Length: 314
Image 1: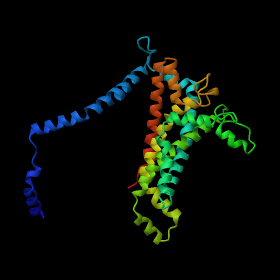
Image 2 (image 1 turned 90 degrees about the vertical axis):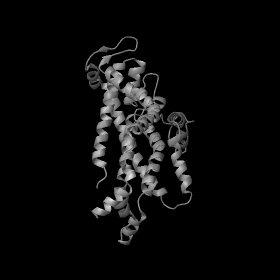
Image 3 (image 1 turned 180 degrees about the vertical axis):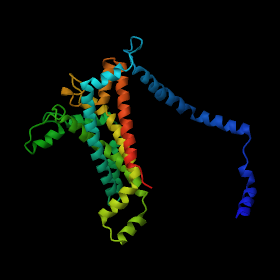
Image 4 (image 1 turned 120 degrees about the horizontal axis):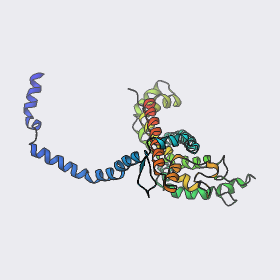
């Protein structure tokens, strides 16, 4: 066997030769040249702002005056500010509900539309359309649906059941559920498509073998589909949690009132909206940067936990 390996290597010896140094240098420079545009954009719009905001989080800065170093004061203010904790609580509730319900519905739709049913492609398209629609456009439409008077679409249908018009975006107990309902509706299509891709990567022979062994539909789903979808589920969960903690446009358009960016008594205030208000309306750039890094730490920690719990098993 050893002689065969040597002879084969000698036969294709020209393929193992290293290219001349000048050719390797030239190809390397050409490679860097091709990736230079996107690399410059990444550095300019991501790396530099990331480093700059980290520096500002340790400073007092209002745009008009030079930054003044204050150490950890901004972070201390963040953790002692009750408004920040209200925003964090609302964000955690919003994320927990939308991720759990959204991922479950996305997987259910994917399993259903993976079957051989009529108009399957039509239903896939219909469910996916909200995912490619602007969040601002969706928020404007749903704000009309939630209109508090009898002309709001939802209240109009409720009137047939003799239910009085509800102020969906004005009552404290209805603000978050209303926005979460819209977010779930708008996000399940993207998760459905990703789950469909994962389902189509599972071999039918596994299901056939399990069916021969007497496994019913639920057992095939529990013991074959779910374990093999762990990488896909991990991606969807992490992506959904990041999006949930970064929610802003929907809250800003649907919840903001004259008195507060978070609606009545900050019932709809989320962390990014709090960051926006402090940084761009009150010009507390140092405090806003500190809030951003606290949010980054929370998202990073939750992501690590998800990778630990949901990582695929060998």
